[in-house]
Length: 201
Length: 201
DNA sequence: CGGTTCCGATGACAAATGTCAGCGGTCGCG
DNA sequence: CGCGACCGCTGACATTTGTCATCGGAACCG
Image 1 (cartoon, rainbow over the protein chains, first blue to last red):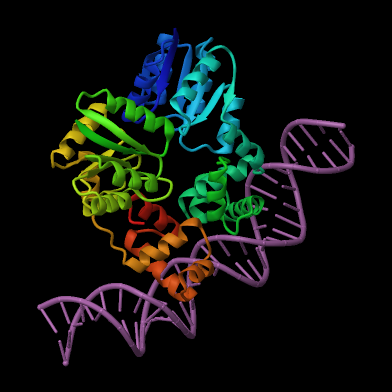
Image 2 (cartoon, each protein chain N blue to C red; image 1 turned 90 degrees about the vertical axis):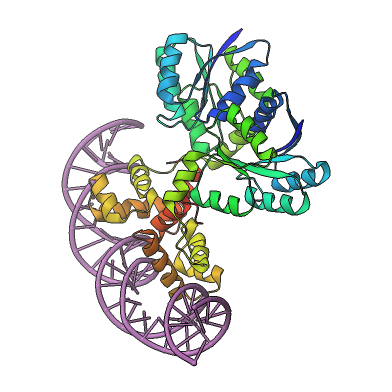
């Protein structure tokens, strides 16, 4: 019997997934969490075999939860399920030691199979997402550029970004200009959208 | 036995919800659709009692599907389930004759109960969403302002918006300025974010 | 009919933004 | 060490933007 921890913030979806996984003979949904913190404490307490994590949880990022679980709960493998498969997220997840990465568009059968694969030490990445990740390439942004671009994400004026980043407005403009150039955008707002779509910020 | 049509683009979620609703004695998931067009043709062919529609489907908006179903399939009530409960969407849905509106954060029990409520002619709107909708108020934007703001959503420069809206750049700037003023934003990009959050565009 | 609102436009001015060149500093690497 | 990459800053310039006043036409309503 494979013990599963399921973390997903939407109650309806969580319950439905649990019911569905529970139908499998060899799977047992031992714990359900609605937040990253909850998932972490449950993992520590119950030591599941596999943690199925939503990428976007209310408090902590699913990848961060996975990292913490790997550190605290040896023997517990992790996998990520998500609605929005951005290439950058997949790379971050794999770098964090996540063993499975699936979009929510797969069938229940695939989900169950991947849980088994991951449990037995294998890996599985959705082919479509893998292709996207490869074609998207690595982020060309320097860490600071990504920072500043992220601060620009909510449409704030340069001056506010500068304050929040503790930088000169001129420097901020330079970073934004450079970032926009790298991602092929005409202005920072378009750059934000592109970088978002590729999971670079 | 209540015949249900379930429309939801994510296979995993759709399957899970179907399984979960199927567990109820008096509910029967007669049809499952992944797109709006599919949902519509299935509704016409199978005449379900209740259509449970995701708000965001790949092709058509869930509310538009509901409108079409009301026109073509008398006796079929509709309800919307969504991840992102924007106040404006709720209003649009109610105006279209949708009888139930739920976020995906509710429990399975609530979902099943609402299906029954809607089937028997009642209405149900999630209290939290209702409160948000009331506090958000109506959109202050004129139709044209909303149009132009929507075209500005992907960060395009004014000139391109003007081309796409067949307007003078000056006129576009006036609309954007006015719209930004109405929603309390410092610039159009922030305005886009605010209007998005409230479901006004 | 007059008032109001929306649409679309123009012109002008101020402010924000994008772009470029260049400077000095740190750090890692061959 | 020298080289290159990144960080942070400055100054100057062109472009884009936001803002405001103002105009005319269309539609609607009391």
